[in-house]
Image 1 (cartoon, rainbow, N blue to C red):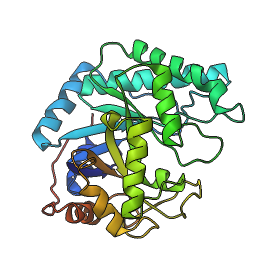
Image 2: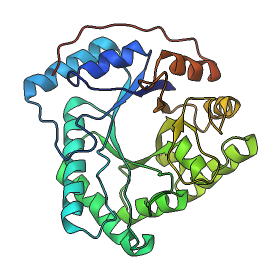
Image 3: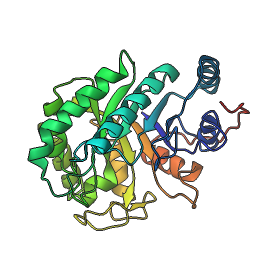
Length: 293
């Protein structure tokens, strides 16, 4: 098990390593470029080599990219679809060059067209992303959504259907706890957790699960709204996270916080709360000077 969080890249991608160490993270997630823009991060070979060397020096164990929020593989807009495919492929290529483990993305919204009619397109789009990314070591990872705005991939059966439509074993899944709870999966009780994980295994397969976004929920069960809370401050609750963190089906995964912390995002306090609930020793903040890429 690795515990960490989403960290900023202000000042350069290398700075994310410093931010990660400052919160005691073993795993980090980043937006390598602004999440509301199509602009991609372009790095020369020297910058890539420098980044890899810095990762080696820090001892961070895993790193995931989060794709831009503009991605929509279920759109009927051909221009948006092409941009989405191109952006994901670009992120995957960059992740492979940098040694980043994978690219997590939301599959998008059908905008009233319906899930089933857009399913073949989503499967085809994922295959195009992988083909355009080439021989990369990074994994493409679908994240479940909260359920608002005609989103696709909100329920486990929809995520499983998207993976089946692609028919590609290289595609994994990230489970967001707040999104699942908002979509009606009762993660606040022992029975609910067991039922949700059984359903996940039946409809997706636990062997496809590669990461957990650890977020409490500011909204009630089934609200279909994406609102993250600090661990223990939301409707899922501290005790439930303790159950999930010690569940053998989730124990060996990277756990990535996307919570507000004290206002600046995941922090050492939230990381150590997860570590405490998992029965692990507390992390200690560290500082490493880096040169921006």
